[in-house]
Image 1: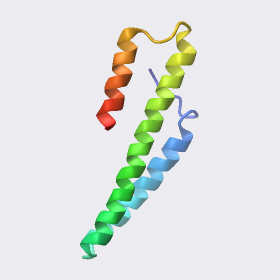
Image 2: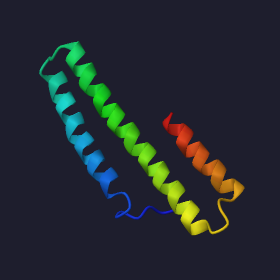
Image 3: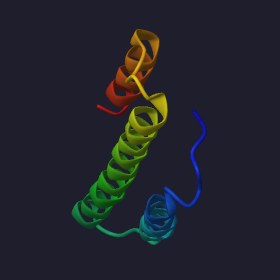
Image 4: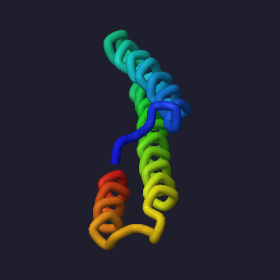
Length: 88
């Protein structure tokens, strides 16, 4: 299953924002910021990336359901389940 960039435009934007946020966290560490601030910001980056991953899985499921006609085959269900659990 290939992802259409137009279908995941919001996810791409979110990941670009998370990329910039991660660069800020790295800069904070290089500048010797306090542990609590670094970990708080790192947790925010982690959450943004996790949500992006879940959004990609959801988009993939929607594509499979709309393109599949008769629903998902067992192997497709297992593949999507494995991808979803990889994020957990």
